[in-house]
Structures are given as structure tokens and as C-alpha cells.
Image (cartoon, rainbow, N blue to C red; front, side):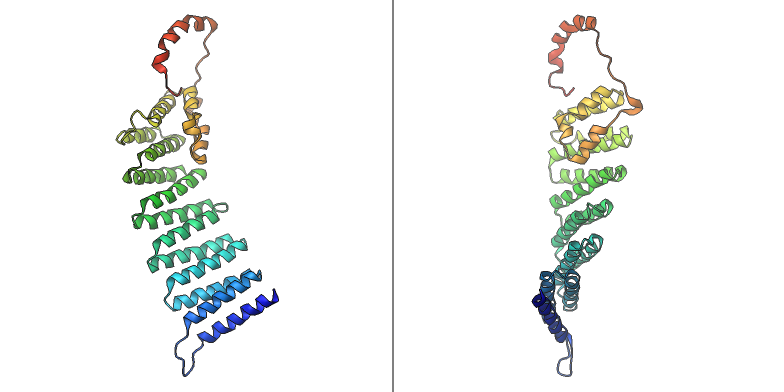
Length: 308
């Protein structure tokens, strides 16, 4: 341990020497200094001196910045952020990773920037959902600007789910619509159908039946939607909700199509209630059941295949 600490301080001393100027040396040697700071950071890290390792990485980043090597400066900032993560100082870590992502963009490597923002989002999710949403949305914007819609829509999906988890349903509705538009643009129509289900659940939890109905109507223009399992289920759900038929809504919302969605949407499905408490169908009496048996058998084929 002591050997690693001494090694680290030796590298720091060498770095400082490279940064000094003299009558014969007019310009600091930023490249060599950055290399020494990097070695010092690794030595401090191996000695479990994480605060000192973080500072060494920041000094490395500064040397690279002065040397106009922004990609390496960003990498050093990310490394400093990881030291903070290991010290359980996640919000501070996120600040350095965000700074690194801006440098990546400035350096002309936006994909690396977006991936850094994605990693930051994962780090902060357990502590600050709102910040995680912000990071995922920024990552989506970077990918979208590069016309990488598949990657962009994946980031948006993460943001949408976290907005639902926070019960920010107005924002979630906007985010899901943007997802749906992107999936339509890349012609992934089956996923558009799933996003329509998510939209409807969000709008019904917002008590906005009109918006939910509009989402379904607009989806009829998607190839393959009309007559699909998703379409039939949504029609039954909206009918049950509009008629305050609690049994029908419960039946649709507890079907495998809804229950096995992403967890945040599945929770919306299970917790959906019709307005005013709804009404349940009265159980048939024994006499009614006997009289209706033949009619039921005759009509059986008519309702075969329905969810409810």
C-alpha cells in the first residue's frame, strides 16, 4: 500500500515538472503531464485513496483540455466520476459525466456522449428519478440528432417509464407519443401497437377518455393494427370504460397482453378503475341459467376468440 502511494506521488511530481516552463522551455508539456497524472490516479486507486485518485483524474482532464485533446479529457472526467460513484457520491459523479458528454459532442463523438448519459441515468435512477429522466432525454436528443432513431427511441422508452413511475402522466403521454412516432418512422409497427396500449392506459389514468379514444383511432392508419389482438383488446377496454362496465375493464386489463407489458405499464393496467366506481354484471339466477343454456350454446361461436 505504501509503495503505491509513493508511486502515485512520484507521478504527480513528474507531472508538475512537465508543466513548468523555463527560459529554454516556453510551453508546458501537457501530453506528458496528462500521462503522469493518469498513472498517479491508477496508483491512488490501487491504494484505495479514491479522493486523491479523483483529483489526479481531474488534473489529467485539465492537461488534456489545455492540449486540445478533448476526447481524452472527457475520458478522464468520466474516470473522476467513477471515483465519486465508488465513494457513493452519485450526484457529484453525474455532474462530471455530464461535463464529459458535452466534451464528447464538442469533439465530434456524439455516440460516446449519448452512451455516457445513458450510464449516468442508470447510476442516478435509484436516487433521483427526475434527473434520470433528464439524462435519458438528453441521450435521446443526441442520438436523434445523428439520425440514430433506434437508439434514440430506446432512451425515450426509459424516460417514459420513469415518468409513469413518478405519476407525471401528462409528460409521459407526450413522451410515449414521441416514441410511437419514431417507431412509425422506422416502420416497427408491432411496437407502435404496444405504445398505443401504453398511451391508452396513461390517458385513462388521466381521466381523459377522449385522448385515449383518439390514440386508438389514429392507430387504425398503421399497417396491421385493425383487427389485431392489440386493436380488439383496446376496443373492448374503451367500450367497458365508457359504459362503466367494471367486469369488462378488469377482464381486459388482467389479460396476458396487458399484464406482461413493462412493469410500470402493467401496474397502470392492474390499477385502472372505471369512473364512478363502475358497475358489475348481476350474476344470473339458476332459472335464467337454465333457460339461457340453449341460447348460450347457439351463440357460443359468435363470441369465440374474444378476450372477455
